[in-house]
Length: 327
Ligand code: SF4
Image 1 (cartoon, helix red, strand yellow):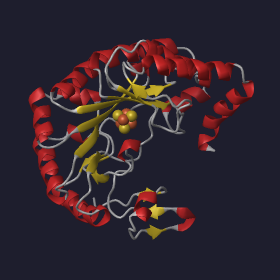
Image 2 (cartoon, rainbow, N blue to C red):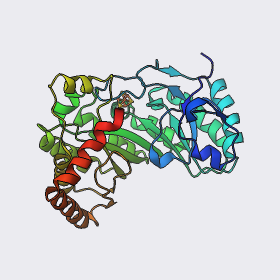
Image 3 (tube, rainbow, N blue to C red):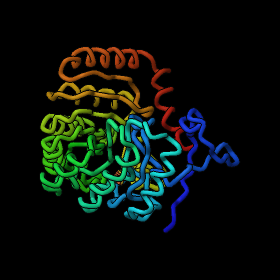
């Protein structure tokens, strides 16, 4: 398959860099090369290099990110063409690279090592190369494989934990057990990676928020990732979770429940991590370093919860914010 064109609506970075981009009707733009359609917010200014297309799992009940994309591994030739284009876009002094799509580490280690060498050839002054991967992939990889990837220049991994509750992981079809996440996470850290684990607030709904919070804290405590990044569940049309809500099988957690769930998780955290709320979906902006800032973050959450309990109007505004996400 030839290079896919990816349509972006957010192109501020290209505009700021004076990159020629083709504007389409309706304020859409065509990406200048085959870029990953998704990246973490913390990679907003990274060179985006697509090594695989889609998700090799693609079954999570809440996710529509790569639903229509068949998983493919790109050839080294395709990747090199993208690197040539990326060099024109970002310049040779770019400092960080992000590898997409959802789990390029599932491919052969020799292949990723070659890709990393290519990336460093085009961008010789990099301080960081990062990639998405899956907890199960890390669990299945040997420590030697991970150490090879680390030695070849891959620095940071972004992994969706979503929840540490075993029942809930099955319910959302994550294809991951808490034990696999613990094993994979510990191994990645032992191999020398910086690890970001993503938690999906609200995914336990109104009925299972406590199990979600406590199970997640248990996994996070065991792994002690460098970063804990919070996102809040927003049902996406076309996903199984959306259908479950329509059928009345799953009750969405209202904002107050999500905040109490966050508090319960945080209260039970005993790890050394940056706790980050770096996403627009979240109801509260709570960030700090664990364990140092834990008590202050808990006090902030208590204040926010108390203010919301005292303001039905504010609660309604927060509740309605997510409702309109797909209008
Ligand atoms: S959440 Fe991640 S692993 Fe699950 S389907 Fe989406 S991209 Fe794939």
